Amino acid sequence: MRKIEEVLNKLLVQLFYDILHIEEKSLKNTEFPDLSITEIHTIEAIGLNKSRTMGEIAHDLRITVGTLTTAVTKLIKKGYVERKRIEEDRRVVLVNLTSKGEEVYKVHQVFHEEMICSILSNFSDEEELVLSKSLEKLNVFFEEKYKSFQ
Image 1 (cartoon, rainbow, N blue to C red):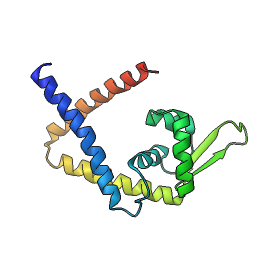
Image 2 (tube, rainbow, N blue to C red):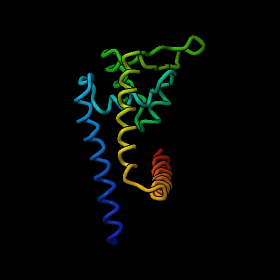
Image 3 (cartoon, rainbow, N blue to C red):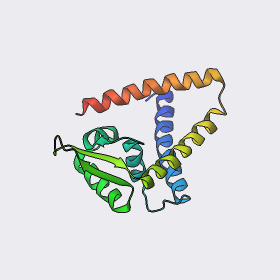
Image 4 (tube, rainbow, N blue to C red):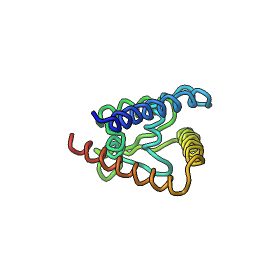
């Protein structure tokens, strides 16, 4: 592996773990200590002011509907999520956040906004643009990689 590839690999892995650990630590300082970071990300994927199908949410989270069903059941018991079937097709299950779930969503959004603002405060306008374009390309790569496994 070339030196630049080693550096990029190390940085990507470190960033991934740092973001997860920072999110977990910040979560412990909120009024929602009963939630795991995975549950927070499930709440985030469900989103505000809308009902989504289990299939849509599972796709966004890159998990199976069965795995999501287990997670949603736990979130229902904790009072963060509601599940309902639609009358037109009882096989379709829609999920949405309760007011308690919406509160968690908003708190987590503030965390992300503060993180991004803090990061960008160290960048020039040109660096922000380069970072944004680079991350878009990286995202496209991972999207294509994910699709190739389906």
